[in-house]
Image 1: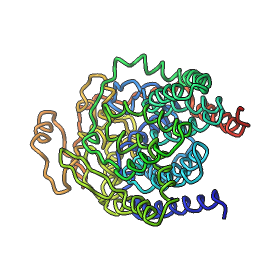
Image 2: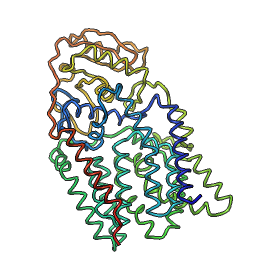
Image 3: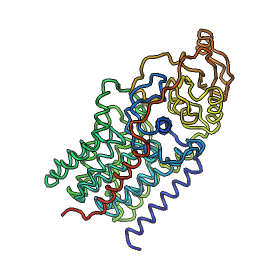
Image 4: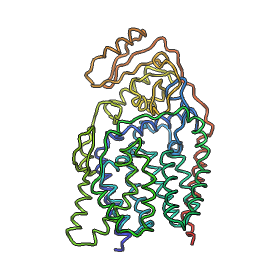
Length: 493
């Protein structure tokens, strides 16, 4: 069996095995909050009829500017309506993004460096659970990583137009990764003087393609604010991956190391506000290419070094730093996936629970008319309920974009107060609010206390789309068609 075919079987088998194992644990998927935010945006786009520039479905009735790049949300408008619980779609996306990333990492790595490097890079991606889980549960960032890999590969092969199309598409998927890739491309032009003109063309072309959304964001830049995330308190440093990356950097020729070095340097600003994403998430992708080169070199040596390579792959050793209590742990995907709780309580970093949320969503629908609003004391829980109910909320997610001023309780027809424990009694603060506001008890579920507000004043204000959904999908199809055609075109000499 030739090397490409052998690696296809190895990576395909590993991806299928990991996915099958995760499928057994799919009930609590998605594990992280990002999918819920994106589902709420997709629901808003559906009700608006396409792309809208105003987030009316959260912090209603006033809302706030919608600044999140819309590529992922427009793509999801192609899914048929009335397919039941939208969480199932997020679950399917989470399960698919892991194998898709492994496959594209192999496709890209074998063109950027060589076959064995690409194969090991894909295997180490599948092995290190924090990185795999990040790709599964951060869909727009995952799409951004895929487009970044395409852009780097196309540029290295001299397919400048394809690289510019991929880079520009990144601007419509994830603003942070777009800016970091722009910085990485600048470093690449410095490291590869002979590619400087091509790199500048990619930067300019991609920036022009992303400019319409970038201009919209800049118009509202004064309305954004940095919001610290709880995830920043947890860092899982992949020791084995770092050691192999260092060895790969030592062994690789300068020309082959240029892409991972430039990309890695471009990623460094991510650590200012999101150290977890840099050291345990998306920032590791450049190191994966170097680690793949290191593993491929060690595999050529004696049995001892082959054993070390396999041990690092299977154990995925990591130094976990959390609230100043460091610990050495194995972060292998197979071990961690089996430890995920099946029905955790709702929190700011909640995972979905089939036991809690469908019951609550049914009650919200029963207690409100389509045009009426609900209040939820936990913003991320509101993000889950919006796509499950089709109702707009007076609270919401993504605190980086503060809402317009308003009275979120007074505007809501239904008050949803998330419990910390299913057996919890109504807390004093909730009883005080109910007494002061004249709220009427509406029962409870395992997840929340419910109160009606007979004096509610707010109704949803659906904003009409500035770009119909069908036209957005057509433009994405046109972009994807040009990108595919350019990737098939003979590389420049």
